[in-house]
Image (cartoon, rainbow, N blue to C red; front, side, top):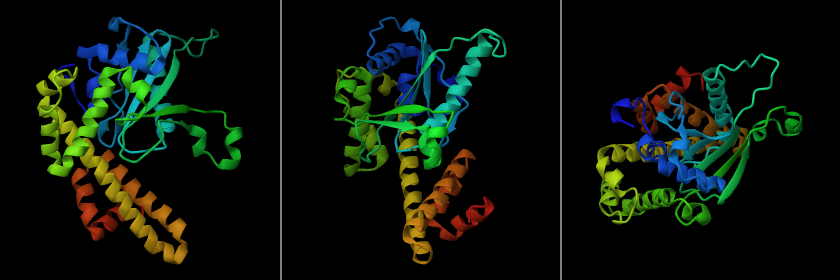
Length: 302
């Protein structure tokens, strides 16, 4: 995929597994997740959704193999709303599938659709099990979940180094991706994030499949990792601010309720700022409480 064709900011995960030049890596990931053994990358059509942004960055990877529609997303921080996002992404894909084949969804004949397989690859430093199942119904009022006419299940797989061993061992590029993320984290103890990324690229073992590709695209890879790590840390800072504000409010309204409300408000502010591309405002809001409260008022969050 030529650099000039990129109109969004990739995450490293999508840069690796959503690249037309290395379809074999994407097929390897597909085989590992599904226990299949396809060998011809030409069977795979990458249909990455480009108009869906998450935290100002492209954040999903979807593709079709025969009668299966796989929608994959990488998360560098835990987010339980993956089923809602996946529902929206899948709806967009099905619409493209139907219109692209000129199928009549209002007709009398049943349209055969590819089966959706929804997976989140989780690699936050926050510990989570190797596998979790996230459900859309978890977002519904607890007493009414059984009445819902829509359900979405998303498999969340922990792909940190040392976790989900069988999956990582069956997909060499995914194993190397986990190594890269872990290496950057460990090297940060000895310098800045930028220095850690540079050292990681230089110290990659000679036999790594991804090594030539990462070194060829060093500047782009560094930019992606810098942005991803900075935004993840920024989210945590905002959440901590929310907890602090919630604790103060909790003295009057109840500690648990105050913490939840404070964190929800600050998270909503962060999501709104990034969605609007107001990164500088997000940075300033972290250190400037008065400005943060001004933004609360601007967006009706106070």
